[in-house]
Image 1: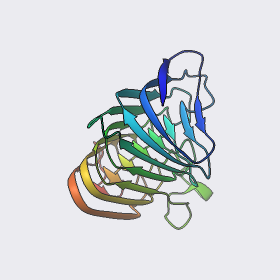
Image 2: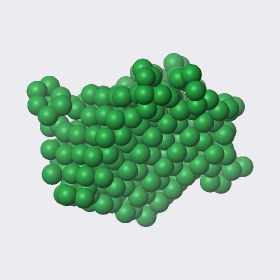
Image 3: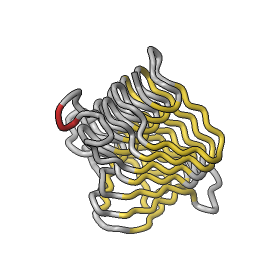
Image 4: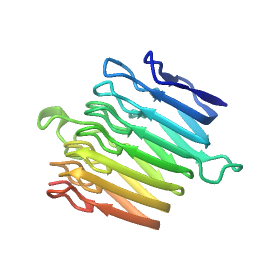
Length: 232
C-alpha cells in the first residue's frame, strides 16, 4: 500500500518494474521547476494500480504529465473491492497529458477498469493520451508517422479534459490519439479548444476509435473539433 502526502520538495514516484500496488490517499504535487512527473510508469513496466480513498497527482514542471505512461509501458487502474468509488485527480503541466505522455511523447497502454478518475491535460496535452507534438517534421500528427498507444476504458467514472489544441481522450496537439476502446463505465471527454472530445488533437485525425458500451459524452473544442474523430 502506497499512501501519504508530499506537495513540497518535488518528490516523485517511479515504477521501474512490473508490479501490482494499492494507492490509498496518496497526494503528490510538483513545482514549476520539477524535471519529472509526480508518478511515472517507466518504459517496459506493466503496472496495475488499485485505488482506495482520495488521491491526487499534480504536475507543474513543464512537459511533465501528472501520471506519466510513455509508449512501451502499461498501466491498469481499478478500485479495491472494499472501496466502490475511490477518487483519483490527475493534472499535467503545459505540453503534457494528465495521464499519458509528456512533451513530444506518445502514451503507452492505459486501461481503466474502475474508480472515479478526473484527468486534466496542460496546454496542448490530452486529458488522457499523448502530450504535445510539433506542427511539422518527424513529430507531425499523421497516424503513419507516430507511435500509437492504446486507451481502454471498461469501467469506472472517467472525466477527461484536454488542454488547448488537445483532445479530452486521445491526442495532444498534432497527435492522432492512438487506439481508443470504450466498452463500459461512464465517460465524459472534452477538449478545451480545437481538439476532439475523443480522438485527435488539433491538426490530427482520430486513429482507431471503438465504442461498444458504457455511457459516453464527448465534446469537441470551443472553436472546432469533432466530438468523436479529429481536431480542426
